[in-house]
Picture: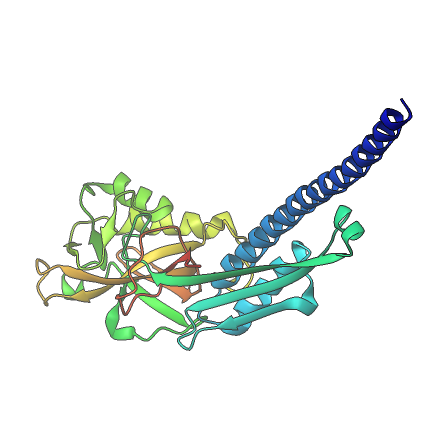
Amino acid sequence: MRRQAGTLTKDNGSAAIITAIAFTVLMGFVALATDIGALYLEHTKLARAVDAAALAGAQELPDTAEARAMALDYAARNNLPSGNLNISFSADSRDITVACSKEVNLFFARALGINTSTVNGRAVARIYPVSRTSGLLPIGIDESLLPLQAGHQYIIKVGSPATGWTGIIAYPGQSGSDDYRESALNGYDGVVAIGDVQEKETGNVTGPTIQGIQTRIDSAPGETWDNYSPDSRRIALVPIYRVQGSLPTDGVEITGFVSVFVEKVLGHGNDNEVYVKYVHHTVSNEGDDSITGSYLNTVRLVE
């Protein structure tokens, strides 16, 4: 009986040791699972923050100084640690890379001697020339004026009868005064692509077109080309075109697009001038990196 009691005591001691080891291992797994979850959450937050900073910065490209300032602004909004933040640009100023690392405090893993871990985030956004878009004004900029300069004023003549063309583009489906007034006010609702050849409008729709443009201006009289609201109606999309020939029936080829701030309209009757300034603006549209001569871009995350 004494021998049996000794054996039982020895077995109980072994069981206690095994239980203690198992408990330690279990706690290790709990610590690992908990801290891995915390690291995953922080990595997700960091990834979203660098994505937002890269996309915001890309809106200003190819102006790298403005792009950097915008990316830094969005990084601060999302509490990215500035000391671990790096912003860089590609040689052609069409890519912005935002990279950031963040030290994360661990909890249960401290029992194993691991106090912190580092998560990393990296995003690359690129601008692509827009290859097709809707929302265009029925007037445009002749490609002979290229290259365009941001903030530079350009004059679009509308309605002068000297050349037999009013300067107004006849997009498909535009058939009367109301259509031209609407497209001048809210943009043509059809899609126009680079390479399309559009007809010249020779009819008497100058008045309605100018009315639509003037309504845009009147909607925000206090705005300027360098100080306007993001949804300003004075920001308009216009095509860049190449005149196919001197005859009114020759048409114009669309070679690009550009965003402009509509400053003012001068003139009267069938002889008007629309003053615009080129401004950087991006849209959510189809882009093509092979396009040259277009000044309207779309932004994509590429990494």
